[in-house]
Length: 279
Image (cartoon, rainbow, N blue to C red; front, side, top):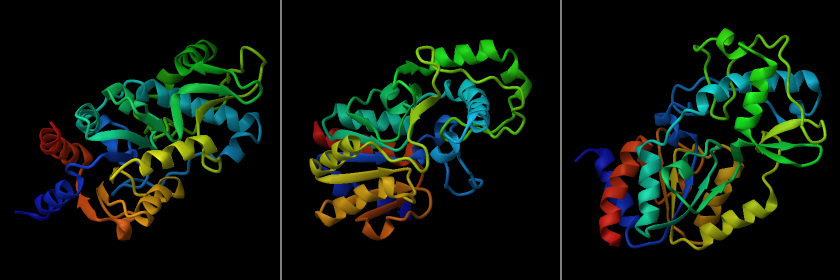
C-alpha cells in the first residue's frame, strides 16, 4: 500500500459516519481547465485589486478587456469528477454543505445544492453605483457589440486565471460597458483582493462549519485568511480536518489527515467508499 492509499484510508476513517462540510479552492477546478493560483508549477499571478479597479476608467478598461477574453473560454468549463463527487456526497446525506472560494459556479452545475459562494460568482455582475445585478452573459454580449472581433484578435493562446481574467496586455481601444440603468461602473459580483467578504456570508459559512462533525478541505492552499479561518475555527472546536491538496498548505499543522493528491482522483475515491457507508 503506497502513501496515498494509506492517507486515503485514514481520511475515510475520519469522515465516515460524520456529517461533513467541504471547503474548496481553485485546485478543485484545474481538471476543468481552469488554472489555480498557487498549485505546484503555477506561474506567479497578480490579479487586480479592488483599490486598483475603482481607481479610474483606465483600470476598468484593462480589467474588462482581459475578462472579456477570459470569460469567452471560462464560460465553457464543465464540472469534473471532483465536483461530481462532492455532489454525490451531498445526495447521499454524507455532506450537508459546501463553502467554495471558487467563483466558477461549477459546484452548482455539478448538482450541489447547499453552496456558499464565499467570493461570489463570476457569472453575475453588479453596478457599483445603483447596486443593480445582471447576468454576465448579457454583459458579454454588450461587450462583444462594443468591441467586435476583439476576442478573435486576442487569440486563443492567452492564459486564463482562476477568476476568469486573461493574461492580456494589448487593451488599447477597448470600450467598457456601463450600467444600463444608471451609467455606473460595472464590476463582476466577486470579491477582489483587498475587498472584504460580506459579513453575513462569512457568518453563514461559520454556521455551516459548526453544524459539521468533520471539515473536508479540497484544492486550497489556504494561503489567504479567507479560507484558513474556517480551518482554524474547526480545529479550535475539536472538529477533525481532512485536507486534500497537491503540495503543502498553510493549514497543514491543523489537519487531522493530509492527503497529497489530485482532487478528482481522491474525492472520487472518498465518494465511492463513503456513499455506500451512509446508505
